Amino acid sequence: MGRRAIEMRRALKILAWTFGGLVLLIIAAGGFVYVFATSDYVRAQIENHASAIAGRATKIARVRIDWGWTAHVSLEDVQVSNADWGKADHMLKAKLIDFDIRLWPLLGGHLVLPQLTMKSPSFFSSATTRGISTGARRKAPSPRRSPSRSPRSSARKPR
Image (tube, rainbow, N blue to C red):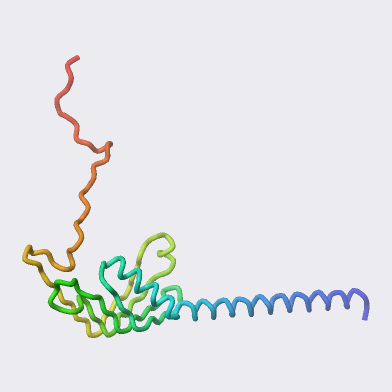
């Protein structure tokens, strides 16, 4: 066996160990992401953001995510509390909410849900004496006119 063959064998061993280490690192990172995404911490973060958006206390018993180009998300025992003055305890209760979400459009800021299903949903809407429903709590923003689209007078200035 020549010196060149020994050097080639050594280089192949280094490449094999490096490639094997990278594969193990990718598998470990994927496992970490999966465990993190299904943890109680992430569930609590989802609850907090949903509560902030809805303006109501939100509870989710369990979150399960099946990763892929289109991720499948399952939320079990979802409850959105009603307003204090509402007759029902919860505005929304669902045994299970399943939805698919496409991840690539999400990177561009587009939310694409090809499938959304709810099992055993209950929605309670109440109205105040003023006729405001629990779902229409916030006032819609008034449209703003941009300066470039402001109406112009049809009268012409004399020359």
